Length: 142
Ligand SMILES: [Zn+2]
Ligand SMILES: [Zn+2]
Image 1 (cartoon, rainbow, N blue to C red):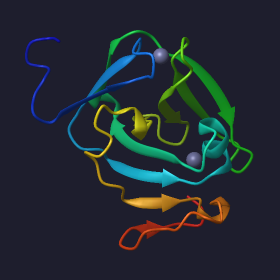
Image 2 (image 1 turned 30 degrees about the vertical axis):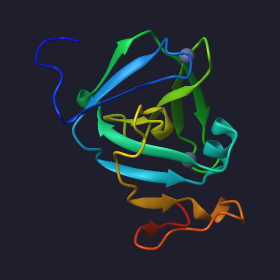
Image 3 (image 1 turned 120 degrees about the vertical axis):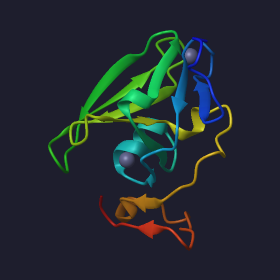
Image 4 (image 1 turned 120 degrees about the horizontal axis):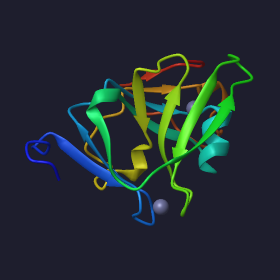
């Protein structure tokens, strides 16, 4: 790791196979749990966990990502997710709406408990058995 790049506020993570590794500095700008149909299909499960960081606070430390561009049928805007070309784990997410921010797939952190969730979004498409927690914002859309 580069001298001076690490610190107590740096958090590390990576894909399932370990080829892709990253480091982020500081706190997320915002963390959403996203129940949209895109996140459900992208992850193959009920929702996406998406802490978003200013782009300058995220760096890839090992490996390289492949990208897939999805155009939202709701907004007409694109979303790019970055994934490991070997094990297919989604690692990053970027949106046309906020290109200065980068989302990290929350479950890929070595310690996925370190950040708090601020809000649940696109709850209009949440699966019926998912119970939303108290104390965070719930948005039917985003
Ligand atoms: Zn991998
Ligand atoms: Zn989503």
